[in-house]
Image 1 (tube, rainbow, N blue to C red):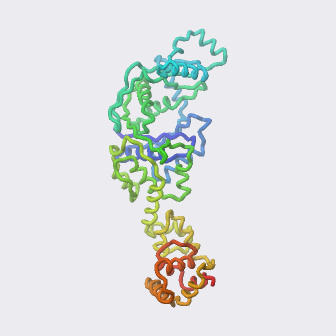
Image 2 (cartoon, rainbow, N blue to C red):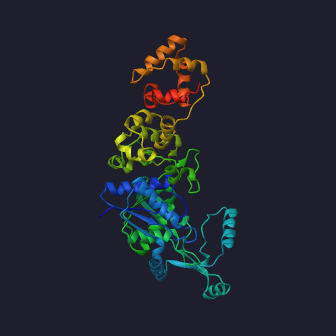
Length: 442
């Protein structure tokens, strides 16, 4: 049997790190088992689903290198959901309910006050045909609930081991709303049957959903799916990740010029028994993947860790790997420039600061004017090499008696306008004698 997994985002917001981690795990599981990975767009909520989010989901996956073998939108399958709905109806597994949201809320509060289980009481099953007609005469349309069996649902979860849920502790789920739109629990079960999904890997917030969906699948067909529920990622504060938090959206990281492999490296190792480290590429992540290493405890997203991974990746790039990208920033960037500057970059695009410093003709008025005047009187003749800086500063030291930071820092500030940066013995070679003379305004 071919392994088939799926990633099923709702296009109601931007994908965040938690969403992509689930996508990555499913992709890795499919690819390491020579299987298929399907992208399913859960857009049955036509009011909240947006085309721009669908495009963004696909763009995010493509940018990260997570490819899919097939994709479909649930909104294109309403006829199929209605067909399966009629089957459940004919089999007596669903029943109409006419309560308004306000009436259901009153019932819930009464159950809380009585200290009972907050489970739907199935009172709608006691309605007579006349009562149903009366409700419909009022303009009420029914929503439809699935009749759960009064038994326990057990399965062997690939991550959590045996899970045992008492179905009587759950309310009969609503499968179809009053407006005829199917809800997630039902449409997902139908799709998993029709697309021969073999493995559903998702967050452990879906565990009780799984019990219900297995019941629905068994009512329509026969469950052949193996489930795995991983712990959710949390923000560094411990809060749940949200689509409304744009700070951790994939698009925000892309706009901040983060490297895809840095994000993938973090998501492949966070919340696992492995240490968080930068990977060479997605193929390495795939070759090292084992579902069993994923912890049942939630991992926390530390942006500082992601930034450190990204900085390491930027500094790891050879010029040949990134030349085309650098030339789009500035045609004058060459291998020597890149190798001199890359150690000071957090993201590749930070190099723009250094192209401005090296290539532009802006003058700098030094704060320590008398000292810089002495330094400029001692400036070595061309050609400059790796020895030039040492010879120059030795001469300045002998003339002024300065050493350490008092010797070096005023020179750096006078030549670059910054108090930090690459090794000066390399940087002055990029600037050159003529540029330094022009720059220092005495």
